[in-house]
Structure formats: structure tokens, C-alpha cells
View 1 (cartoon, rainbow, N blue to C red):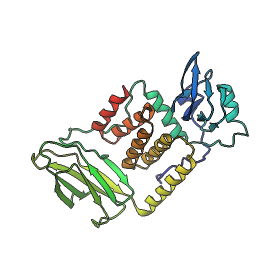
View 2: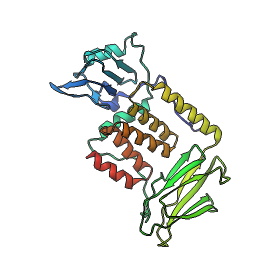
View 3: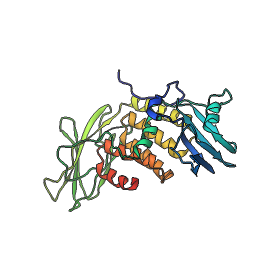
View 4: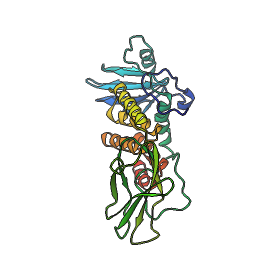
Length: 307
């Protein structure tokens, strides 16, 4: 039976060290004055940065540092001082480390991998289309949704006159409307549609008969499934409450991605970027997520910010 969701809370899963090479820690939160010294070169420590064997971290007064060890265990540092890597390892494995938690090996691997990808702008999981549509959509190509209200959007073309069409998987038209805007919000309950079913939608330019989007699809999850996912998301946020807010949203985005809730996933990444606009790790994760869901036009604008 397919797993409906994964839990990020305190589970004992060990991270595959080969993925991160010689990395010992990765920075999850860095608030205040925190300096990383490597090869006698001191720089400001940033979220997403890897910590290796001979590195040293200096934590200033009233600063806060949260690290993830290579096995997924976390370490909080609230006291000012200097910490080399061997000292950090002793601290994280100490019985006094009462704040230690275990993160999912999958999420930690994704986070570390995104740092590695920054150098070569690696794109993963992009949707391939045989023919480029004449109207680009701005909503994920194929997604699950939790609630009855869904907003569909697309990029403008000349004419500004569109017809949105919603059908069942057999092509029977369930809803159709002409409009001049580039988005529409539908209430599936008010349209008397059923949960646990898939629906297709497309946009046509009324000024040009052949100008149309790809046919996109969403699946409205059964209420029991949706409620279970919402409960797990709430538990996840509670378990990672002390982390940097941008990282919390990034981990939430990963949770949504695992459940194919791609609209929610992208919104979580957008919130993370607003909270940490200079964090290229999060932007790369967002960039790859856009490509994965077919939103290559939006992804191209993010790519420019990563150069």
C-alpha cells in the first residue's frame, strides 16, 4: 500500500554519510553574530552552510545556532564562545544534549544535496512536453489539493480574453467561463464536485483559436486523507518550532511535495524566500520544484537570481 505521508518528527533513521562526504554538520539556524573560520578565513555563518572537520564556529553574545549532525541529530548552541568541530561532535552525542532531535534522512539529504547543486545549477525532475503550449500555465501541471477552493492561473497573451474549461477525466465539461483575468478561483463544493476524484482544466485564448494551454489536472483528496495530512503537517510544525522560520517553511514544502500537494509546496517555498531572501539554498530548492511541476517559465526568473 502506497505511503500517504511521511513523518518528519523524532524518528530514528540514520543519514547516509556518503551523500555528504566529509561533512559533519549543516547549519539550520544562525541568528545574531556567528562566524565560521575555515583555513584561517573567517566569514559570516549562513543557514545551509556545511561544517567540516577542521572548521571553527564563533558564537557571539545573545546569538543562537542550530546544527544538524550527519546522522540527523540536532544541536542547539545558545552560549557565546568558540566551538571547533570535534567539540561540536562531543556536544551533540552528549547525554546532556537534551534538545537533540532526529530529522528524516530524506529531508536532510535533500537539504544537503541542494547546497551541492548550487555550483552546477542542477535541475531535477522537470516535466517534458512534446509541443510547447501557446499559453503558459502558472499552476502546477498535475497536483493534489486538500480543500474545495483552488486558484488556477496562467500567463497573459495578446487579446486578454480567455475561456477556462473544467472537465472530468473523460472530457465531460463540468464548468466553463469566459474572462479577461489571468486567474480564476473555483469552489469545488459549490460546483457539486466529488472528493477523491481527478479533474482536468485548460485555458483558451478567445482571440486565437489555436492558442491554448496544456491540459492540466488536479486530484481533490478524500476528506479522511486530507484531514490526516493536515494533522501530520501540524505535528511537523510543532516538532520543528525552534528552527529558523525560513527552514521551517522549507521543510514544510518538502512534506507537501511528498504528498504531491504542489500548490502548497510552492507557496511554502515562496514564504521561505520572503523570510530569507539571500538564501540561495532555498531558492535552488524552489527552482527545482518549479521545474518538477512544469512551471519552467517561472523557474527561469529564479535561475537569474542564482547566478
